[in-house]
Amino acid sequence: MLRRSHTAVLEKNEIHASDFATEPYETGWASEAIWFVRVTEASGDDVKLRAHLQISPDGIFWTDRDDQPLELDGCGQACLSVRDFGSWLRLRVEIEGENPSVKLMVYLALKE
Amino acid sequence: MAPSTEMLQTLWRADSRLSKYNPLPRILFFDDFDEGVNGWCELLGNHDNNLDNIKPRTRDPRPAQLSNCSFFDIGTHGAVDGIYALKLATRPRANHMAQLIKRLTYVKRGLVQLETYFTYKAEPVFDDSVETPRQWDGNYHPVEAMFGEFTISNDVNDGPDGERHHSVLRYVNTDREGNLVKKWMYKTSLQVTTKMQLDGVSTPDDWHTVHPDDWEEVPGGQFSLCHNEVPTKINWHYLRWQFDTENRRNVELQINDRVMDLRQIPVPVYDHTYYSCDRLLNFIFDVRTFLPVRNFLFLDSVLVSVDW
Image: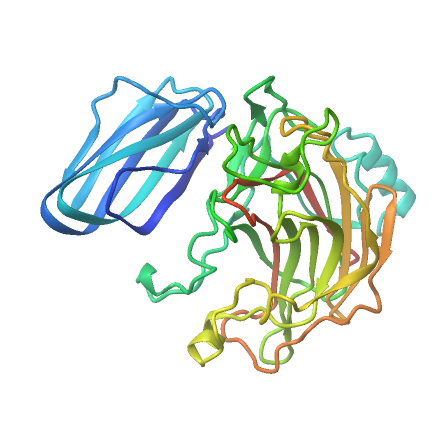
């Protein structure tokens, strides 16, 4: 049997001007995951995006894991790979800068 | 020689995964979500590679999830068979709809039957930020009124030599103010496609219809489902929906022991043709919230059978 895999698009050209979290996503069947964040447009000065991995027992109450955050300065794509995460994943995203605004895509690629 | 109905039923009933279903003679697909999403994917609106050009209502229908049905109080519930169910989850935003589709084409027009075991819930709310008309009394839980509605539908298009239509059935749990309604409805107008919007039709409030009130009650369709008190008890319901692509009609909807005759219900048909959708046969589930509360629809498995 081939290993099951699945890609979910969690954010699709959404525009964010302040901190936010991605929607909760169920990952109990998977053993490895890679987040991809692509900023397609950025405005403001010194815009920086920092995404922290969060895990949860129930999809409601969340805690940061001590992974190195995914970071982007302005436009571009970055990834964050993770294992041992339980049944739920999301990103807590910080947006810094002066009058910042980013348009972004967020993908979660999962594998059994 | 084609196998007899009795022979097929004997074979199906020997399989514990199939014995809870009542298929027509040929099983087109059986999706056990312990094995993956099986082709159920997000119904994103049409675009020209620029996602900014997706029309509102169709730009964020959320990805499919494989859920082990875990909750904050008891942990994992699991599905009817095995662990995983297909899950549709809205954002916590009023009038947001999550929608999944499975896309096929048809070999022959005739009877098509979709069966599933489903359950539904709103996400627990831990503060007083969302109010509904009734209070908790030890039996009734306000979260029941935080679940808006769910809909099952098809998209059938013959091609240049025929017509396109959607058969659509919706369980309205509440109105937009959170008052319990608990009725099955059918729609009376067309789904406003991207092409229609580019041709000047307004973006609708409701993905399925031109106006939000374009719905009528299904005869015999007013009854409660088994919500079961709290937001973390899930009870699976049997659903059997039969439709006829030859006559472009619904036939029956069965929820547990209740069978609704849908043969006299009109189904809107487009007056124009659609390019590149020949012999289209799509199956769609969606769920919509009317409050800033995530609404969930879970499917244990889906079986679709046909009469050819």
